[in-house]
View (cartoon, rainbow, N blue to C red):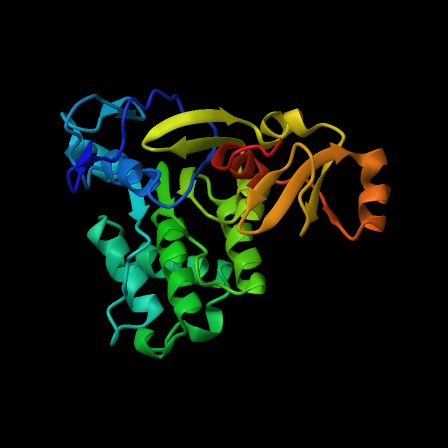
Amino acid sequence: MYSGGKIAVNEVEAVMTKRVTTLIGRNGAGKTSLLRMLSTQLLPTSGTATIEGLDIIREAAKVRKIISSIPQEASPIGILTPYEQVKMYLIGRKFTNSDASRYAIDALEKVGLGEAINSPADTLSGGMKRKMFVALAIASDAQVVFLDEPTTGLDPLSRFEVWSAIKKLRSNVLLTTHYMEEAENLSQEVFLMDLGRIIDHGTVKSLLSRFSDRVRIESGKPMSESYSVGGMHIKYAPIDESERYIKDGATVKRITLDDLFIMRGVDLES
C-alpha cells in the first residue's frame, strides 16, 4: 500500500484471531494505514484480507455492517451531546430507537461519562471526547472493533476506565497504541510493526521471554554492551547484578514492551 509516494504497508502476513489484538510500532510504522485498509476506508494497491471470512475488497459493504472503526482523528459534532451522537450512530446502524437509547446510555456510563451524557460535546475536555468515541464502539456491539490509539490524551484514571470498558466488549478488538502498559494490560496477542511490515508477534509473555530474569539498567555513563538512546545508556543485566549498578548511580527498571523498541531501534555499544 502506497501513501504519499512511500510504501505504508508492505508484505504483511498475519492471522489475528485473539479477542483483543494490539498493533504496536513507532510513528510511521504503518499501524493506522493497516487499520484503515482492514476497515475498508483505504483501498490496498495489492494483496487481500478477510474479516470474519469476508473479503475487505470484494465484500466491503458486508464488512462495514459487522465492524465499528474509531480513527484517532475522529472529532465530535460540537452542538450534540454524547448521548445524541452515540444514539444517532446506532440508528444509522439500523438499531431501533429504544435500543439505540438504551445501548448509548449503557456504553457512556461504562466509560465514565454518565454525568456528562447531556453536555454539548464542545464543552467536554479532549479526554472526555475520546471516551465518547470508545463508548460509540462499545454501543455498536459490532463483531469486530477497530480502535486507533483509543486512550490518547486521557489522564491515568480515565485510561483505566476505558481499559475496563474495552475488556467488557464482546467484540473482537484490534487496537493500536503507543502506551506499552495499555498493550500489556489488554492484549491476548501483540503484533510489532516496523516500516510497514510485521516483524514480530506473540503474547506479551512470549515477546518478553528473551529478557527472562533480567532488568533494564539506565545510566548517564556508557556501559559495555549497552544501547544509547538520547544520551541515556541502557543495558540489560541479570537481576542479581542490579545492586552493583545502583551503587554506581544507575537506575534499575522492570522489563516492558518498550524494550522491544530499544533493542530494535538503536545500535549496541561495544
